[in-house]
Image (cartoon, rainbow, N blue to C red):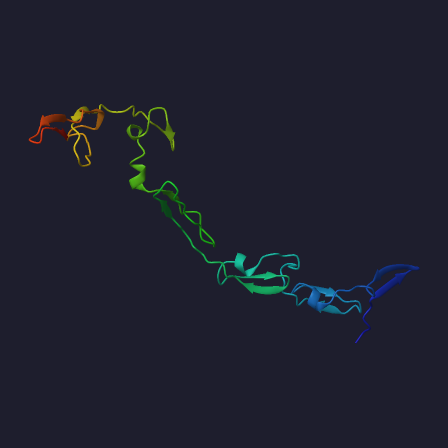
Amino acid sequence: MPNIINKVIYGGNTLIDLTADTVIASGLQSGLTAHDKSGAVITGTNTYDADTSDATASVAEILLNKTAYVSGAKLTGTMPNRGSVSGVISTKAGVYTIQNGYHDGSGSVGISSTEQAKIIASNIKAGIQILGVTGNYSGEAVEVQAKTATPSTSQQTILPDSGYDYLSQVTVNAIPYTETLNSAGGYTATIG
């Protein structure tokens, strides 16, 4: 078997010198061939696609049961795949909490249809805008009632009669007072 040449000098000039090369089979991509420092042909055995030493992903940032390499280590993801996520808000202060995980972008969150139906111009004060709807409500005709009440010795609640919205005024009559002569020669004062 002939000697393997790893250095060629011609006319005092070095044409090829592999003696300082550092390539080894485990550092060469799998399937590629080269010469090592001895001049022997080597075939690469390295199956790494990239240098992952500066990668920063964590298992929580990789989809559940998917694998990736970070800093030369194979990681299996724990991030849940939530797919299409949708939610509804039904109150003024309502919020929808977005869960941790991957979302495919096809979900949506919005105001419930029941609440949307209430956001109409006739339900909003004129000139006020709520969620893009400008109000035109300027009040309705109301039925007002005035009443007269006579005091009594017990508490009274004065309310408008059926068909009236509120009382414009309540007039309280004077407390009745009478004096009558009694059998003892004095007067009896009757209040109320």
